[in-house]
Image (cartoon, rainbow, N blue to C red; front, side, top):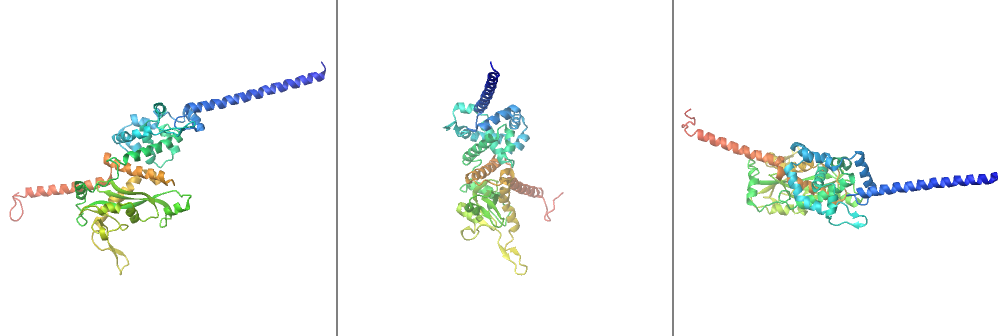
Length: 428
């Protein structure tokens, strides 16, 4: 064999070897891709067709970066934590939260946590779908309530529940929808003013009996503004823009009774609207006009108190003093009215103080911010009814107790002085 033939054979061997190496590389690459896809498909739970996130879920759990839900911070607090720890984490007592979960569980179970299974659109979850869920209805409600009580982002909260961020985000909205649907009609949380109940009105009026210059007040009304994100639609952003604050807001108006519950509300209204217009268009004024005499509502200068509202609403009347240029009260009810208007002020700040999600800017999606606002309102009433943790209830209950104590002391003095002589001094 000539040297020329040997060179050709050697070159052919090199080419064959290179081809084998390339084939091996392609084969190993395909196997790697297939293994990633199979792992993602096995671990896919509540995140639909988002395979990269499912693979990330597997990696986070296997690496220890994300705890298993059964060993998460929430599960430890729920099963082993002391009552005060649970209260600090959830802003609800254990018994109150148990009742809330019982109220909303059916809707959480009936709601799919993902929209698609491959190309099939998912309807009501089937039994084997529920078995695959890593998070129970109790966990889902806890995620929603925790998110509402916090200003932290989802990426900082999801690890406390052992859930990936996308799963946590889905559970938040499933939980809030269940809260709004069930709490809207429950007597412990609903926004309902039972003005036909004479005993209820007498009980509310009795709490304000110390304020004799403004008698028979059963509730107070006030408005509040919540910051919102700038909308890309110029018209909608203009609706929410408030000139005197130079920012975008969504508003609500609350009527709060002297027992601390929000009994009437105008929620998620444009920030540019006046409080009186919101009360008119949301029918709050209609409800106040139906109040039986002699009961009435304490208000500030933003609301009507003349015409048909003369005996239904009370607010301080102001008149400009020509000598000083200052506005002064026409009557002497100002200091007492300030105390009576506190329920509305406290109620507004109580909602945002406990459910601190309202301290973050509301989303531009009108449905989403409606769910956020109504969830916070219903949960505030729920806390008041089931835990009696409400400054308004505490304040007026204290006034009633003090009045009873003074009356008891007066009766005791009268009984002790029954043998007093004409001068009023007793024999002792």
